[in-house]
Length: 137
Image (cartoon, rainbow, N blue to C red; front, side, top):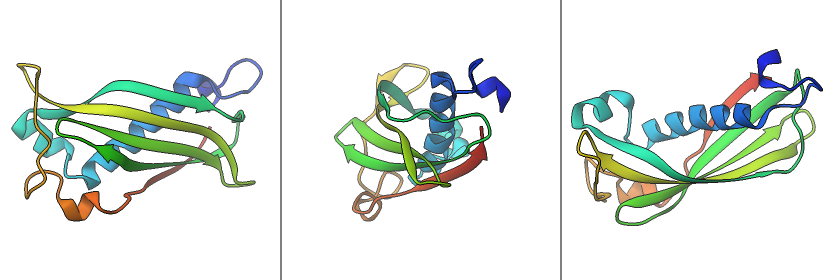
């Protein structure tokens, strides 16, 4: 979309972050953090750190594919990784890692990451989960 690019037709850095947000929301659902259950439990994954490397520019009209997966986890925090490619030529445009923490709202207290039913189960953690989104810029 035109609003995702600068005057030169290059994808703006904030557009990449918005696409990552959409991918992360889908990935969260696969991990058991769907929007309805989060609203009921008031436990939310909150981004506490983002690392992004811009490798090649996306351009106006490009079709982009975003993939996300669970990369690492601890007792309270976990990492999700993302990459964005242009399927037309397979070019890797960005790589990104985000660290998230589970937070109990409205108190804002950290919540322990469970490895049992109702939390992120070991069977899910033992495999890479991918979430794809294709859409023109």
